[in-house]
Image 1 (cartoon, one colour):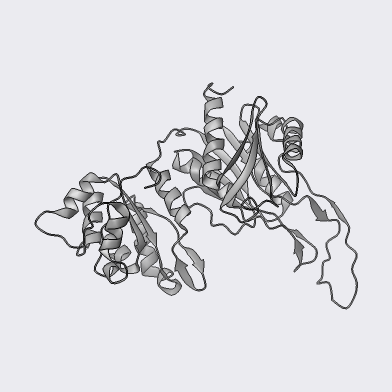
Image 2 (cartoon, one colour):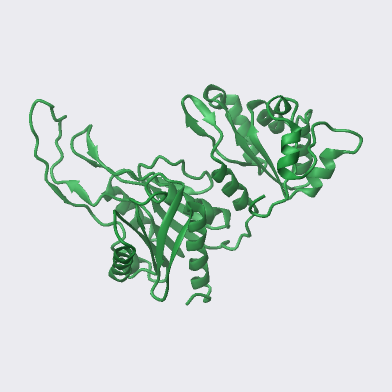
Length: 367
């Protein structure tokens, strides 16, 4: 609703035992459907809607929809919406054992084959939990977004890399991969063909993009340069690849009983050869700093812009509240050769701002 949507609520008999219809009526300003009558509410609402969102979607509801059973208010409206070719999105939430059930997974596959959009739950504490509000909203907005990036190919790197000290221990950083995943998801929603080279991040990658996993920095660089042999229109390197690697990792586990000296040497830079290998692409680099002033952050962004011959650099100070690793929001300075601006927003908003600039430049509208 805050993004301009008109929202109408349909509640199952189970839902009204947990949340009153009056609350949803008050929240949306629209009457709530809790039963189907001769007014044919399921037909009227499915015809009216641009998108039907089922959240949370229980194992029971998912399976009924997958088998075309429409014996509740929710499943009946979904059935009509699918028959009308309307967008349907489902957000599963249930116990982890139910979600991993083979037959349920088969039903999820059937739903996807029927063009139902599924937002994966967060697997925590043995449960398939409902994703956060921002994530669900972004999911819906992405489905409703204009497909202004159809025909474009986008390459994104995301997440941290690791460098081994011995076969068990390694060095890394606190990057979650959320920023890169947000960009990959936004580009895919807008119709682009997206490849995500993903390190050891904790954020679940989108299901509608090609994902290449890479643990070590050298592996990420190799995957990156291998992909650059194909044509990409937009290249966005958000990955927090390790700056250093252990010169001589131990072949056996290091023991606690003895002190150890480790020599770190510079790790390969993932983005170094991007401009040479993709001369026509719109290339974006990210720069993370710690406890800097705005002036210092701007200077390092400009330096990276020129050093790597980039079209854009997005710089942030991870020491600032709401801008660090693992946050859903970010505060950044976006720098191009002709402009600079600061932006504080959910990472999805920053992702779309970057893509807006890239699309404008590629189509001759950017400065």
